[in-house]
Image 1 (cartoon, rainbow, N blue to C red):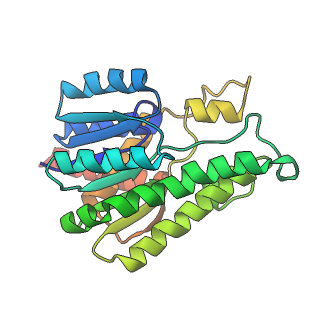
Image 2 (image 1 turned 180 degrees about the vertical axis):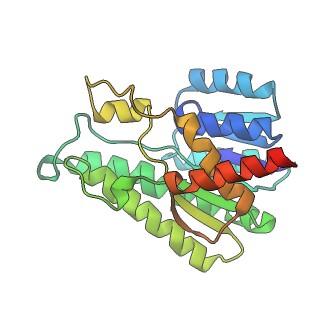
Length: 241
């Protein structure tokens, strides 16, 4: 059975992807900071597949060790690691002129250090399975928006780590994916008091991510919006058979 570990899986894109993989029969290890929300998600997923839920904060090395141990307990193989857990930082978003070092350190710890630390622990399992590393990035990593400097810097760093890991570990497929705007709690924090109901639901991004897993193109940085036509073509081809 193929196995995936997804961080930040109790809501948003992580939860949507977990449901899609469960429907495909993947075994899952999932994490989130909220034990209550994670337990609810696990209950839903357990109706579809074998799922292990480990609540905790990815910035905590002991929690990352627990996640690695959970993979060992499932048999030691890992076909997909999704570093999805992320933090925006302060809300409302501060300009760089007023961004505190404490907030920046927290953003970097969650969005850069934690994904790398977890990947390092699980790299032997991923390499053994010739698996996929999927890091969730942002358009802010390559664009420049007022107030987004700290978060953007963290995602730019994550992109760089992803592609360097790809160069150092050619047996892996390593992807940094910009999902685009989504209607999530984190995105709402970026726009406090504003109506973001016009943003797409995270589930609309899932076909693009699945297309990466199905096609396994060369490692690199991808925009979900560019992958959607390919995902639709794959679905149409499957329906024609």
